[in-house]
Amino acid sequence: MPSRTPSRLRIAVLADSDTRWKWGALTARRLAGQMPGSEADASRPAACDLDGFLLRGRATPTSRQLAEVGADTGAPVELTMAHFLDRAAKSATGCAEEPAYDVIVLALVGGAAQAALHGLAARWRGRARRPVVVTGYVGVVYEKLADGLLLRHGADIVLANSRHDAERFRAVYEGVGADAGAVTEAALPFLGGAPHRAEPGRDTVVFAAQPSVPESRADRQYLLRRLVAHARRHPGREVVLKLRSQPGEHTTHIEEHPFQKLARGVDLPPNFRLAYGNMGEVLDRTDLLVTVSSTAALESLHRSVPTAVLTDLGVRENLGNHHFVGSGCLTSWDRLDAGHRPAPDAGWLAAHGVAPGEAHQRAFDGVRERLDGLLTRRSLPPIAPYYTPATAPGYLPGVLARHHLAPDGTPLPGAAPAREPNGLRRVFRDAVRDAARGAYRHGVQRIAPVIRRMGEL
Image 1 (cartoon, rainbow, N blue to C red):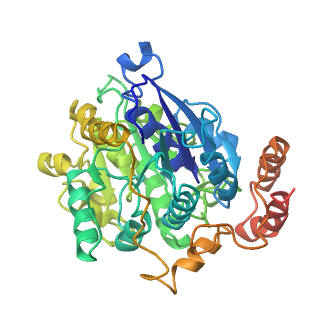
Image 2 (cartoon, rainbow, N blue to C red; image 1 turned 135 degrees about the vertical axis):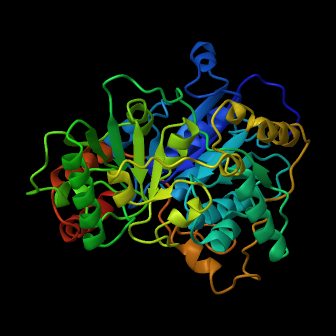
């Protein structure tokens, strides 16, 4: 990028699900020097011009899901990867060398991030000035660490949400001989909110549900059964099952057995209820947060809300609760029923970037310093992902083909040209998904081809 001194950054955020949109939009605001949710933020004008984009696909969120994430940045535009790449390559001023954006934040799964990196590299090849590309992970990284990181390699800044993650990220890159200089320690951008304060007469337990953890119907029925039993055992306590999505809505992971369906026909006690809504607002009224491994536990710990990570189904990598080994939060329903309240380990909280207090307000200082250094350079080197036709000749073509790109990042022959998104399509698609709620997964699968065909309109 050329040397620039504007007070407002031009930032584009491309996301592919509701939680990634939340992470990407709030990361953009942090990069611009804002603290979402803080008192200072409320009186401070926006420090960036933010354009939001949603990658069209299976997990594209509905309007309801977007309203609940709490990003408060306006409605993003839904489009394809090809259309986004064309938008990103446009000039901001009419000068061919001046990019439309100063910064592009890729809030995507690994394969989509890799496609975007190769596509951006192709469109900016031979041009001295290009946007700074930022990417990272939405929350806890407990699966596909190496592959996910290598798919994100090539970005100018790869954000790590804690010191613990930064060390792991660098070790992966250095271990395969890739440049680890892009790894930059930060924090989850949505940490914040008022510290927990007990209120006389309030005793609220919230279970944070996840779409695919655990995955089996039997395990999810077990958790629901224990939650209901806990409510019966403690009739003076409000017990809330916090849901991620409604049936028919998609998140990053497919939810085959939604808790609200499993709860049908169950005799629920009067102090038990199901709830949707923004997680931060729910935590404002929570006195004990219970989960298997939800990122909500990190928000809860940061706010000093008593937090329990369940071991009833084991401490296992496929559950993600192994991330909390050493945290002091691991416990079981039997112990919670008996009145146990886990005590978090201060050292673990600090290493994982969720320690209470205001340290998180300084977590992005290093990121902004690195970003400023990149923005003031006369030019940036070409985007150079680790995966190339030489390093992964049998893997990369398939990753890019899902987004209609050739291994060199150019559109595949015969690929449909990028088109402006159809606003009517989103309205109709949301209506179809509303009608699909209450259907089992095979019912959703039956209407999926219809929704996909709508994307061709």
